[in-house]
Image (cartoon, rainbow, N blue to C red; front, side, top):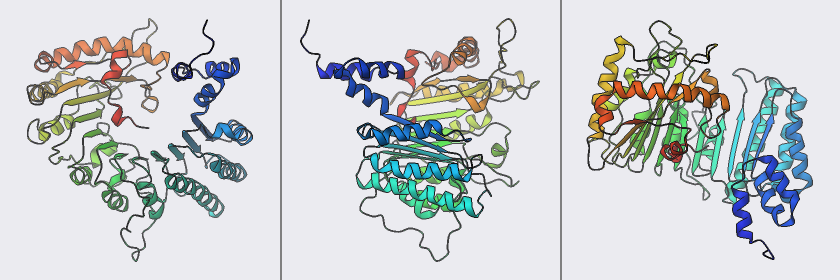
Length: 460
């Protein structure tokens, strides 16, 4: 029996424990396990002030205020503030609690903040409370920036943000995520300069996640365009797309990529859902030459089934073919080594016997698969560098609840297992040339599937 347990071994053991209950037990079992277990318990903190249910968040805040050494362990902080369904007093209490908490958190490296303020919701009193909330958050961001601790910042569903606030956020840390903030900036004063010189604490963005519709907002686009000189990872989602006009709009995606072409190595794009309003108004876009692009990921939903328009077939959308064809395998992306296609497949709920409806390529859509087969063959035939192409599908009942790739629920796993085998066989038959050259369908939930996912584009 050894007289003591090496601290390095204790740290290693605790690092590999995911269960909260297990960590709590370890923190009480022995003195040697207490500190590393507490560090694991409080490394990630989530505070939800929503729908009037704030007791849990306030309990966490009170605990950290009482045991201040625990607050120093917090490295990742997620805050969700719901204004719409909460009383003014509840929002005010949450804001002031955060204001008291922030000085106790010196080591937060990842900060994610989201609200759900609907457009036009700002009455005088709510507007004042919202401004206080933003001021508290901005003050904390500035504090973490000054200490050089902040490495990642995510903002979601913020309406009417000031240019000053966004400028500060864009120079706060290397990894930035803006989700659903398009057309959200306040009216710009014509006398205000387009951009001010960065201060001494400004940090170049290296990873940016933003909506393909959000960047079509001119003030936001102009602001972001000035912060792309060091960008090596760009993730473009369809979050925030709210378009009511009938005319089509040219995408700003090519301009962003062109500005970052000398440094961009990882690019992930989510295509709008086929036949959706967003799909109709967003014109196709041609990417510029990207000489250093190493990894390309495209998320999409297949064409709908002919007889059941609410269900997909297995046929890829024509937009995918246009994009891959015009991009070119040799000239425009000469350094490309990985092409990941991620279809999100809607599925029926299981029948009484447990079976699930299996779609297939529609006869009138088979030309799409044939076209994709020829295009993928060109990518796979390239030798220097060789290109790995694969599908990484997800299956879901409700697109608002896509399965979590990191922690899938049991129901998601069952559905996935039922459909993946049929999907793999169908696509192998539909893409014979690409399959013969190494194209494959990968199980995203299998242990090997993790190796196929590119974590560089999965930040936040």
